[in-house]
Length: 309
Image 1 (spheres, rainbow, N blue to C red):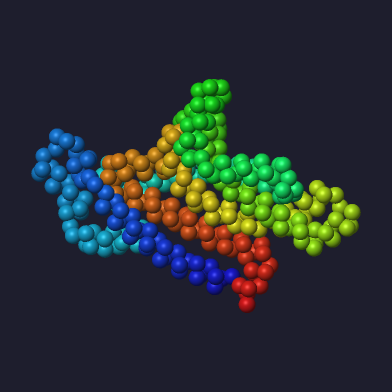
Image 2 (cartoon, helix red, strand yellow):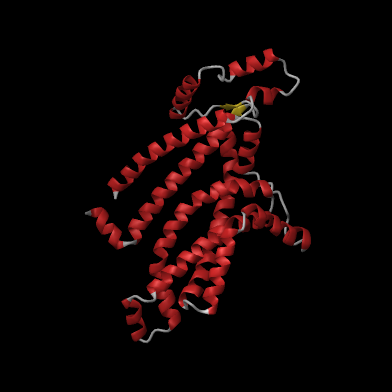
């Protein structure tokens, strides 16, 4: 187990280096001069040149890259020229809002996905199974921003049951969390349905039935328990994807998280903030992947035996 974690951490180091390099190239390849954007159209060439030099953007690209990697290794992610403070400080200030949104969406998706998958998998090929299969395909097909807009039109503007944007009360979290949970619910439902269907054919399920257990007892006590192994794994992997998807959802609902921060940073060519957000999300995804691998080994005795051998 320890050897596996160490190996994953070493791979994670190269992943973080790749993420840092890619975002460095992308932000500098984007059109627009950060100094000119910050100073505005009335700025003189001398003012733009002075700010460009102060930001270190007048140096050769390779020199900027080496300096950037050195700063990252020292946990120095640069200062935001737009906000006038360290970039990572601004990012960490917005992180709790994104975590709240992501965790709420995960809980909703897992609860709804398990229920739908369990109902569909208990009677494969039936009417309920076909309805759930069609519904999960639709959930994954709809664009996230479109789902958010439809929910706002229905529950905020039409029925006036929930606020359309902002933060402050638990009600403000409902629409963005549901929007973010839509595609994840479909993934959990389809995976649970497939796992339950396979589990219901296993010999231990037939043995449980021969002992006189009801179909509900067999389903919840035996089939579902073994079907949770791949679901637990996919939850760990998808939470990182949810944080990335939160960028769109947060802007639709004016949620004050990392999404709105990075969009503003991209619009204003604030390199330090964009790089800090990207590296933070990459690090969180890496940690979640390692946790998912560890959980999978712990839950599945077959994999645990292979790792020990």
